[in-house]
Length: 283
Image (cartoon, rainbow, N blue to C red; front, side, top):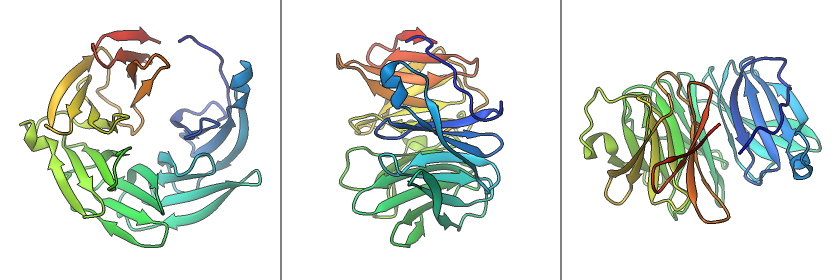
C-alpha cells in the first residue's frame, strides 16, 4: 500500500471518525466540530481523489460514534448528549428519520444490523447497553461493564443477534440480544485481573469464530470464541490513550490471506499477517 491522495472537507478541523459504506461507494467522516461529510468514492475507480457529496452539522454535541445501517443510504450517529440519531440519504439530501433517547450519559459506541428489521445497539459512558428496533421497541441489556462501554460489534454469521462488547474496565462480554443475556465474560475466563488495561476496540473475525481485542497496553489479542482463550498476540503499534470503535479491522485479499489493520498513536497504520503475527507493512 502507498499514499494516494489527500482530500479536504472539514475546514481543517480534526477528523474523529471514518467509515466506508458496506458497498464501498460512500465514505462517512465526522470532525471535532460535529460536521459530517459524505464522500463519493466512485472516482477511485479511475485513480482520482474522492469528492465531497453531502455535508451537514449534527446538533447532538460532540459526535462520538458512527455506523452504517444499510449498503449506502442510512447511517446512525451517537452524541455526547446521550442521543442516537438515524439519518437517511435520499434525493441528494440527508434527512433525520429518528432520534433515540434513553441513555443518561454520553454515547460511546454504536453498531447496527439489518435482518428482517433494523437493530441498533448503543453503549454509553455509564456502562449501559441499549438495543433499539425499527418497530419502535427498545430494551436495556444486563449491565456488566463497570465503567464506559468502549466498543460494540455484531457477529457476522449468526442466526441469533450476538454482539461482543469491550469496556474501559478491561472486560469483554458476549451477549445474546434476543435472550437479553450475557453469555460469556472474558474478564473471568482468561483470569484477567481487574487492573487489566482498558479495551479500546473489539471486532469479530469475518468467519465469526474469533474476536480481535485491542487494549490500551499496545497489544491486540485474538480470542477463540469456542474456548474463550487467547490464540495470538500482535504487537508493535502504540495505543495507550485512545478509544475507538474502528481502531482495528480484518481484511481479506484475493489470494485468501487474512490481515489485521490497526491505527497507531504515533500516526502510523500497522498491517499484520493474521496467521504468523508478523507485521506486513507500516504506513
